[in-house]
Length: 71
Image 1 (spheres, one colour):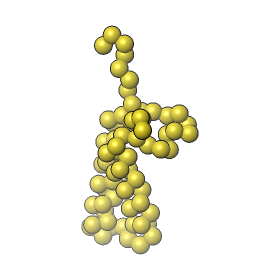
Image 2 (tube, one colour; image 1 turned 180 degrees about the vertical axis):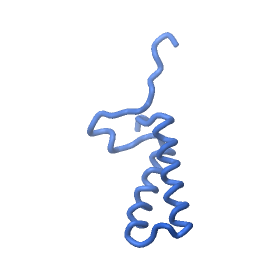
Image 3 (cartoon, one colour; image 1 turned 135 degrees about the vertical axis):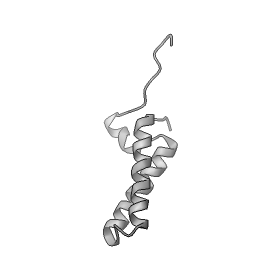
C-alpha cells in the first residue's frame, strides 16, 4: 500500500475520530447515529494511522505532497 494521504488530511481525520469518541463518551450521541459515526470514526482513525485511504484509489486522488526533484 502506497501512502496517499498528506499530514493535513491525516490530522483532520484523527481529530474527527477523537471528536466522535468524545461526543459519545459525554452522551451527546447515542443509538443508530452513534453506531454509524463510530464506524466512520474507526475508519478515519485507522486510515489516519496508516496514511492510506482505499476510497481515494478509484478516483486517483492523493493529498500526499510529493518532494520536488532537486530539493
